[in-house]
Image (tube, rainbow, N blue to C red; front, side, top):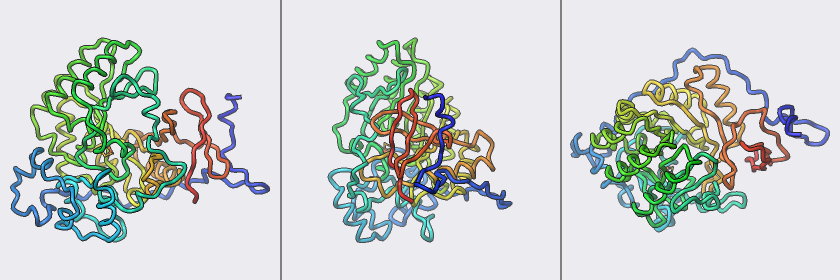
Length: 411
Ligand code: SF4
């Protein structure tokens, strides 16, 4: 019966009337206006609080890390806060607390009008306290698929290692918000033990060094992990997950880090830019430095309500990424993580973005639109032929043929 899947109706049967689920995504007439990023530098945008900070200090990873904004009072020196934001910062102060780098918080000055792509990603709101039945603390089933001390294995040939729970910024939409900044840090010894177990397991060909943010580790720790993995004959692919090219690009101004990455090239770097306002001069330089160090860089955007629902934003971002040697790799539907309901969009929103991109960019600039299914059931490409729907429940066929139900957002 699986062979008939390709012919499965993509319509939602609502009794007498058949309502198209996917709809007919009209390819909009190609606009003649070029969509592009307006160049900006976070140093030029820096808040008056840091007016006297030198360009050298601003470009330093240590200065950026040590001056991360972590309290309501610090943030009030930079931007006015709503009552809701103040309450949320206090509410989350002992759990998934406010944490944002000077580089990223400086981008608040670029926002205007009703759109707040920077603010929504870095400043908590009380919407995060909303508990929704179909959302989960561990949306990807990472505990269920636990591997060795600090790992997860959800596919036969791959393992993911939680190298740290630290990040330059606590992104408010984070899938791992129950771990990042809250759980006890894994020790270097426990991370290396997991890597040793991977090296002894010939089933594994592809390793993700994730977190948190793997580049928040010291150069020595990164060297130790990469050295061990590269010496292992059955590991083909080493991936490193970091949002620092976007949230703290000054990390890449460290020659020792770049030499370490170059020594074990190619390292596949997965990063996350979500909006063209994040496309700063500092980030462009960081991507170029990673590329010169032999890294192969891919971007994993997350589709977020109130941040990046406009297809033109994806077009501008992806053009900028390509110019800087970073391939748009995934567009993720926001995971079913508890505390992120206000970020979730209907699946249809992504179809409209993909249709827009398809008409304007070559395949190089078009990411895979995917959902990471709950409970570790794996990624599925979101394409009309793979989806059908009962009411607001969408049914997917995953990578190994299992049928999985998934709650869509009511439109
Ligand atoms: S950098 Fe990644 S892991 Fe860290 S808070 Fe942001 S989304 Fe979560």
